[in-house]
Length: 123
Image 1 (spheres, rainbow, N blue to C red):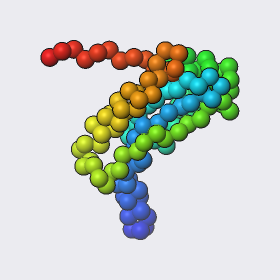
Image 2 (image 1 turned 120 degrees about the horizontal axis):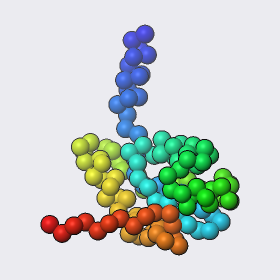
Image 3 (image 1 turned 30 degrees about the vertical axis):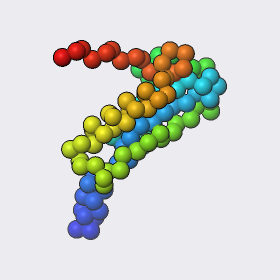
Image 4 (image 1 turned 180 degrees about the vertical axis):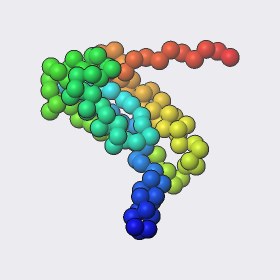
């Protein structure tokens, strides 16, 4: 039983793959860029929501309903190396990566499903 507890603890302490992902509509070329502290969970969540027709991105949901599961690809764009980034910086690192990919791919309007973020107020 002690070995089982050790394995459980080791699993809980192992960082999940974190970083930035894209859901690509191969029929239209549109993209949804997202970030997660747990990429496998993000893919599972997005896929489940789309299949259950409850995804919060209405345009993505409409295209999923129209083109079907086979028209979409879920891909990891970039991951954070947990060994090279202090744990207290993981969220900031993931957010910075997301900003980088949003800037690079510009998945807005006709090119994607992301909503433009409001400009940060000048301080």
